[in-house]
Length: 423
Image (tube, rainbow, N blue to C red):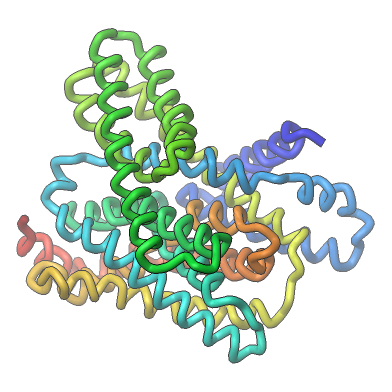
């Protein structure tokens, strides 16, 4: 069976869910799609348990839906570039130290803490897993997705500095988390003598190499765009940066995700300012907004379908419920630690830390990494736990973050944070 039929199924379901959400639910896109995917997966699992013969063909189709390589090799590049191209570098520069600390120290802290906590939690439930596999889960659940929450925060009129902290941290921690994830994955699959020096060298090669490569291909695309004025060609060039650049980065054994983030920021700022007409800028923005919406919709539907073929264990759901609370605690710690290390106490007071914690929604990136795991990595367990955490994150945190922001704004806590901000 080819990939066209399964991919067509994903697109059809994503389109139906998007339509129902727009016409009936009227929720923010990510929240509405996740809610409908949740209902869809629950119905499918219930039907599969009671009348398995009805879903035989569906189960076979999902089993042949071998998108793990596609998710890591292609989708992540599109998602990260689509987010990066909309980041305003002037605003980001004002929050550069906060964003840098949160997306590096914060991600590594979160990965280690989540991995350690899950190792002991699973052990307490009698589920024996390797510590490295728990660290993989820590890396894949650490990146945050700002797409759903930023629209809500704009309506709540939170300070622009807080918006940029959430958006900038999320964008860069996606790239860093993927590098950490792939590094741990390579360690777990690598030789027994793979030591900490090798780990550090691999991480530096991936991260530094990825950023340098992103600057190179981004600047090359900028020069090409500056020499013409044709929105069709310039959109095509941006598409080539992602598809060609990500593939070449993998061949060079450097970080494709960080390359896409870097290239996206360069094209989205320097490129828009000096190489694009207003018409081209509008088409480029709309094209990548649409790509981002489509891919997130596909990922939410995909994780719902994946529950048809993974072995569901009630104990996993109990672990997932506890993991939600523990991961929120770890999220607060992973925001608090970098804030203290670089002495942001004046600007990142408790209300700001609380907003960063509750507003750190998990989304498409986490789903993509979880689904990409092979069967040798307790795949069913991690997909189930990721599904539970992401569902709670988007439906509960996403639906309440606006009220939390408004409540703090009424108490003048968030505006004070903005007034105290600076570089």
